[in-house]
Image (cartoon, rainbow, N blue to C red; front, side, top):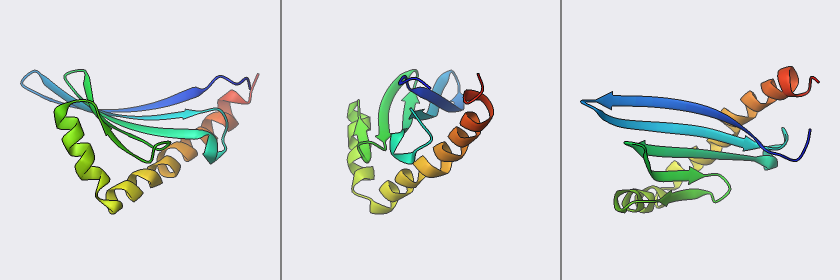
Length: 107
């Protein structure tokens, strides 16, 4: 395996009356080691990312006025942050193990 990173992507879509709100779970990794995995959870509205949780930062970051306001609120909630940090192992680790064992380790 070379040093380039791989990415798993999980997408959830919700739309009503032509407005689109969706979430993207993303796992970026170089190996199956949990320390080499970054979990990113992004919120989008009409193709604009407005807030993101990054496991490497351990907190939310807002990209719009609405996103900054919500990032501050989420970052003040220890249970929200611990739940999102746990997602790295819950979402990424099990899927990455499957990819490595069944696809990526085969030449």
